[in-house]
Image: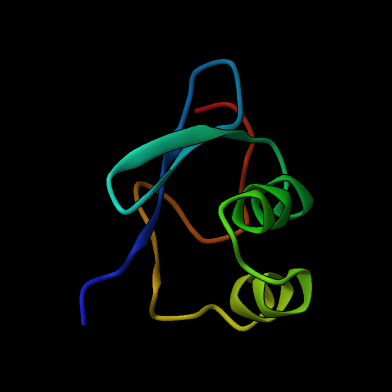
Length: 72
């Protein structure tokens, strides 16, 4: 199964663009931001937290390790 959520490589100024099903939903600066974006995309907050905390296969982290949001 292909990931539906992509957390792109860190930006030079920090933060990571996030796309859900190919649609840009914002720049996350923390896991909390990512959870909020997923909640706004229709996921229940508890499900979103479980996905992020559990390193779900539905989330692809590109360019650096998961959960890192600092400047590139």
